Figure (tube, one colour):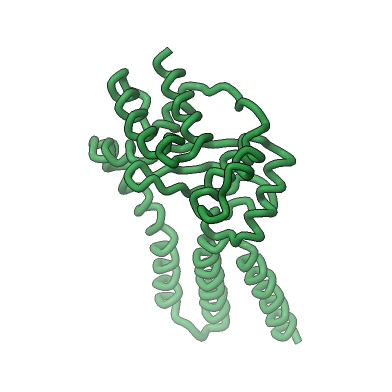
Length: 238
């Protein structure tokens, strides 16, 4: 009887964890499933060890493998940081710009001009914009329009690039009619231009020139992001 209760409890816990993993954004689901598998392996090893059906050395090896699996992603994330401390990451740091609003964090790749983003708030929190289908993006736009004008304009910029055949002057004006955004601070302005804190006048001018060539409205670019880039340059040079 106790074993049956334990099995039912484990099965229920597994169902709950799997359903929770399924609600994660797609880019996080693999890690969530891996956590479930590792957790299940640990529980199984502990139970078998306590029942005398597994030698303690096998349990120790399983624990070491779990620790190694958990530590590896951290080491991978630390390697670029260590490289930047040696000055090797300075060039890569200038290749992306970030514009953050209350609901969205948008990233612009300097080389390709491609926009990507992540949702910071709401029903799709932690989802990448590229993971959302059109219906979900429309729901997100409605939420942004209700809650934050800057977020709505950022999302409109992304939609213009992802669905160019649907982007028109009427849609752009609808999302941009809400007025001016809040003033920048230095850290935000540097992030918009993809610069580090020690950027000088020439760095600011060069970054602005590179980005505006890709995004200027006269070249078929994006009005809102071009305005943010101009605002960041003017703020840093003032």
